Image (cartoon, rainbow, N blue to C red):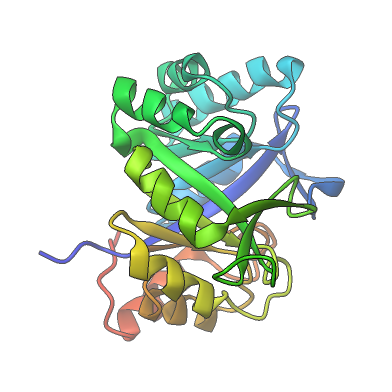
Length: 255
């Protein structure tokens, strides 16, 4: 049986509210996360991703509350990322109602965190978040970045993705910093390169601007597609994306 292609809205959350911005700057209020999550659920979203864009100690308790309230109202998998630094952070998020947890910077600083999380909770809860940009500094031409794409590491993105899977990552969230915010479509070359090495599901992120942008990402090898601003603005509905994917012959979950 072929697995359905997943469509995943992403909500950036700060101080209990959904915010919009560019690379986490100039944040503007975009609504209540539970209300927006409910809207996307009713439109047919397969999963939701929350990103804690402040990830401070003060904001953490607020985020746990947002996750708990969302889990009570929305009955699809919920992934939460941003500021996850320890195995205990993962445990608290799962206890609050998260189904999966995204890890980024902490895993770069301490790769064994991935095996620690996977060992305790299973690979199925662990999503490695990759913010990737093109760079001549690496063999593959893709480098991992941090701080919303503003700081390059020395990690070859493809080598890091492969190592992370070996350490226990159960899914890869691949965000193209170059495509992010352009609304010119996903970075298909990047998606294909990650697909070629990955034995776990791949989520394509960054660049969606039209309904027609999603099917090419699936054709390039993504198992799921993620977007934020075009859903928040109402330019595109989740249901419209799924209708177009189905038109291209991809299996989707229907309401």
